[in-house]
Image (cartoon, rainbow, N blue to C red):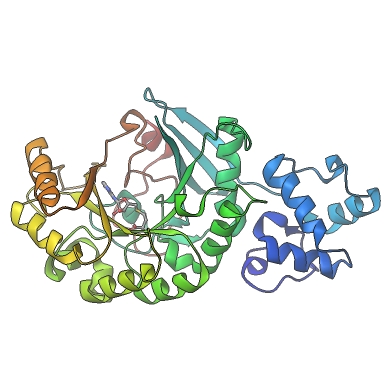
Length: 377
Ligand code: SAH
């Protein structure tokens, strides 16, 4: 199944095609291969994403013969939600089982003017950012398109989102587990489905991909997608960033900034969101703030300051309230747009960098996997 997600659409000889792995173009090709007209793709997308119907037998505008053919060669198989935790503040965290031993987490954060769904793109993460809980778990594999879009499908069902009324999910951010640009093709297809009118119909600018800075993939992304971009900067110098985000040793800050500038070039109203986690005594001084401002000022920017969210085993601490306020004020004095992110869902460990799920790591792992009960605690 996962092979089909990336390659050309082939009729299955081995297993059933999961239609959630296919974007609109893939579905048209799939129906063409069945000898059907392209509008079948429109019909089936409406059933899946607008009506949330996954049983071919209930798709009343398809002929009985076609429904039977579909049931024989295809399926609509969603990842399974095994735990739904609601925070006092209205946030939700869902634990989603993918296969034996692996699960991921998806978070919903309601605010007065929007509802943001934070989704994962990989099981674990191969990057080794020193302040991130996911990094400690190591990496298992990329998520399939079905597993990425399936998180949106499940959240939308559980929240009772209505497409044509007041939307509950208005924004989607790829800020959960994993580095989305290391799962490029699948993430692009899944974000296309989020933005497609026949999919979830989320406005283009409200789907945001967050990256630690995989520079070559950023150049490809501009050609392949229209998502908004958030970049995890976290430090104004290569020396410090090398320690926090080891990927920086491969793609240093100057190269990353050039790629970001290119990403929004000739796109009016677009800007880069810079994420900056505030670590006590590490990257939160006034001089760090001035250096950060100098770096990003030439680029249309917004800064998201994220007070560090601790997790078991970390040696970092969150910056104090005074240091956070000072850092924020220095950036404001440079005329930058700055938001200090409020910590939401802290009673259910749903904040940035706390997402863990369960990862059967194949590679490096520095600490034992946290048991689900502890993560869910
Ligand atoms: N790999 C992607 C997306 C996942 S992380 C990326 O690096 O952008 C989403 C955001 O949460 C990133 O900005 C990440 O640096 C931040 N983050 C990770 N651990 C954190 C922690 N413990 N506290 C606060 N933010 C954290």
